[in-house]
Length: 294
Ligand SMILES: Cc1ncc(COP(=O)(O)O)c(C=O)c1O
Image (spheres, helix red, strand yellow):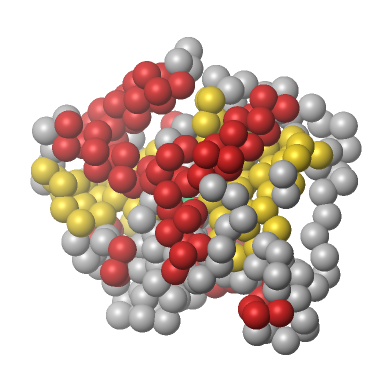
């Protein structure tokens, strides 16, 4: 990352700043305890995509962990557009982070009086073009998703260590991504994406109570699939359901839509199947419609 990369931009605590000058304290509880919440947002054609849904989830996550964000949604929306405008890129990724802020070394959040809020714009490429066109190879990680009765999976918190460990398993196995199971051994989601299966022309994805983040892209896929007349189910899934699916794909802000061609050495019936192809076209049309992206 170059100091002068014109595609990088940052906004911190009320003002645009140079990304290399943005600082958080070593006493910040976001750093010390993962005490904070965040969003990943894509922009296309210099316009943030589905920003309202991301901000709603950010405020819901913050409310759930009793973290008062010192800005309202309108201010954060303006900050997001400011950081997009400050980036030289037409499209890219934004990370919006709210930490509990600096406090004592003890974990009590009462010692933190000023949350840190920052946005970073930078390019994000999580898989190669070859993977996007031919399909990703996945493994099912031995590292489990945090139990839903321990930390509600709808909270998009700064605690991602088991996701990082699952991703490490994928790296060590030479795979493109890992799927995580919940504490009952059923499929929850990818390390940073939701998972969908197509079986007999029907679309399936695990519900939030199975350990899935309520992904903005997941919600959009369901919305588009229903509009396309597909039968959609938010229902528990096992590894078997994925191994034997006709099609499987991942969804996420970073991922967008990625087809899956193999899971744990089992080749999928089709990598880029007809339903994936149909939904990808609908997804691209939606981006184009909402951001005037060419
Ligand atoms: C654990 C996890 N699941 C799913 C997703 C996909 O969610 P979204 O579509 O809102 O980006 C993400 C995205 O960051 C994630 O971190």
